Image (cartoon, one colour):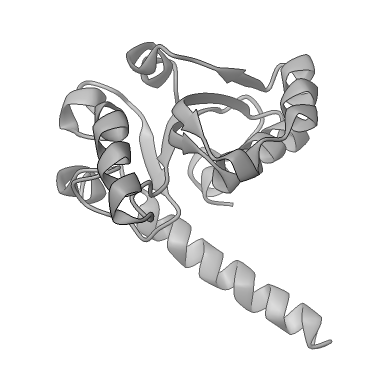
Length: 164
């Protein structure tokens, strides 16, 4: 919804998801498959519960999904960069993830000179998956995204209650 609002279309938009490949990432791949949005995933690890080879194969065949280990190149070819939290784990796992994923943080250095919009499904952990300055950056549409999610959820509740 937010991408449509900002670009006037979804088809052909190039979105790069950065971080742990998880359920949010799979939802973006599914959205890309259904709308023609091109999703590139730069993820050094995948949540085992998120593995969906059938989805990845279908999206690859449709030309709407690819994985990349070239983070800077993926960002440079994007209209939107999207991240999600990766520190929501036990202490031992958190320390390992910080070491593994810190190079994938959305920050001023990674996004320098890039004409991209920044999304995050929130809550954001400033200093981990995204720096505080990028949360507040004019390219961030995280709070527009959150507002749109609120309205979508209100509509869903009304539908479930039979009010729509």
